[in-house]
View (tube, rainbow, N blue to C red):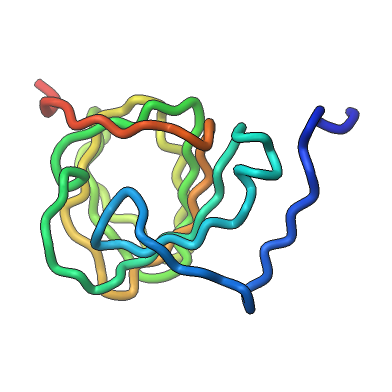
Length: 133
């Protein structure tokens, strides 16, 4: 298998990590540069609880307009509800393949919750939706 046209090598060093705001105000995001290295085909980010105590639209039912979403829990836990899957808690060491466009919502998370998330495409959109029937 050959090289992917236009993709470039990326090395995101921990010593240069920058944590910033992203989709959710209650989380901090460390973007790993994969979106640039894959010409926007994927985004990889480490996401962690930043201690802010406020509600946001992602705690409502929503979907991500993407073709792939994988989440690996690095620390802590979070409880979500997924359409057709019920309420589940993901914990340190757990990995999920979240089906594209599946309705879901976050219920609660631990103070030390931290995940690695990989999504395609990099510029995916999030939409609030009505809950499942």
